Image (tube, rainbow, N blue to C red):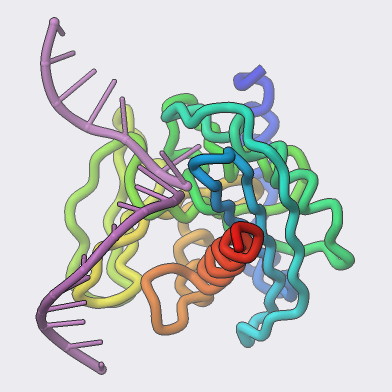
Length: 214
DNA sequence: GCGACAG
DNA sequence: ATCTTGTCGC
């Protein structure tokens, strides 16, 4: 099944160019989840923002997380709650940032790719750490990046989004190239290491969890 | 067998 | 991912 989806994704990713995409990106989504380690209750948050980083809409969904985290199989754990949360949105985004990998994955199909295929939307995977591959440390300058190499292929980039800070790991999810992924990720960086869409989703998901615990 | 390992 | 104290820096 992975192979089928991967083929579809590869075909579709070639149909999008940067100039095309730029003009189409008006609403961007960020998705993140936090989980209560004792109750296994997951809190999914989705934030919609515009190009000026203004928040347009927020959505959330609470559900039990039944599947354990296994490296390489994050989708099985997190995609169900994400799907449920995503369908509650009033507006649909033109681009989605996901906490995790896109094609920088053992089977070239991380959660960002999986989500993109599911909803037929361009996605970018922005992970805080590496799953597979190797990279050389990028220059200590905001905007610097170096390729992530996996099985002799470039599958993404270690991107310095802030100086004196560890890079993040950007890889295409769906209908987007590596080059576009890097540029678009940088365009949604504010003052922090993590791009605003997923950063705000992260804050909201943790807020929800704390609220439910209290 | 050993180490590595998104969240 | 989550827990968790102090600490450094804007």
